[in-house]
Image 1 (cartoon, helix red, strand yellow):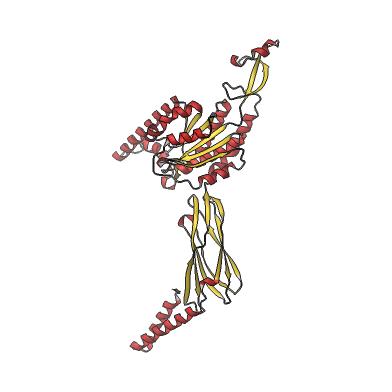
Image 2 (spheres, rainbow, N blue to C red):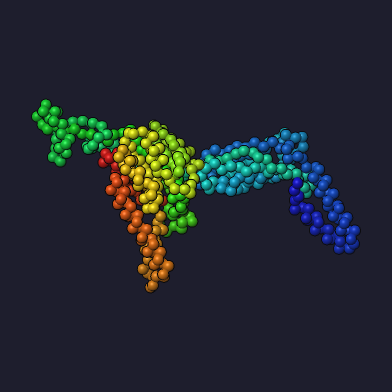
Length: 444
């Protein structure tokens, strides 16, 4: 049961009656009259169950994009329904303008639309639909909440999609070159041509040269149909929030995991257009998601579905288990991209021992979301006459951390690992550019 603001208003009007006839019986009679009137109005209200409720779920939408959920109410009874309806969702679904008042004649139906603006990835559920059925006077209502299942699936936003056209143009330019000479195994033979000064002598085809009056060399073209294995770290290091660009408050930034997802989506979209096969793996202490994608034109959509439910887990990553999962995809040489934080303590204890196994069979790239706050703290404001002790200590700690990261990059480089370390907003295009560089050099 619920009462409207008209009941307190009626009670307040009783002050006029008391002023005209100041007696205890006046107060009692007025209260009794309001109570009887409210009870009578409650009896005229139809049961909320007379309203049939059906939900129309919005399906999937990219995080930050608006969505619209629908409700259809049907009057299954024989009386007019005076309804107040509230469609409640969990807070991260961003439901607004979700309260409605309507009059529904017998046998009629009405469609209601609830705007949503998801603020978190994953499946965001409807909590329930509360229906109030008011009486004729609008004083009292019968109320009941129904669990009407519904959800909206918020996918990673893929904001780096804007960088894809320019990288595809560079990829087409790379594929359009006439005969690219590449050293090493795993390349496709293209043609024979006459030797010119500057050609690698190791590319000379001596048998073909013996049958010709000129020295002949083999030319190669970059091999397509390579494997790209994307490994997404969902351990504790992925939970930290970082600014997208330097100078932006961290509170307005995004989790490292979301920035890494954006880089993975751009790389996968680019590599699939290049004819490469994509394997995706995400995990921490255990594998959270695994998918093998071959020749999928909607690769970004499929990866977004896989990533939607992934959240950081406050545990250390088990790189032995993740490396084993990479090997389960196959022994064929691949480009393995590890999307993890370049945190010296976490990498030294967990990742470094398993890197020799990965680099022995694969080309390994470590892509890290850099926190621009480190660079800002390491720079003491020169405009100030005298920096404070706190600023000096912050700068020293930040510089020490940056030095540790540089040393770690050198160690990884000696192990044959390429490191791409950039801000959240710059990592996706930087990783895509590195992939194109490896493609152009025939290093995949």
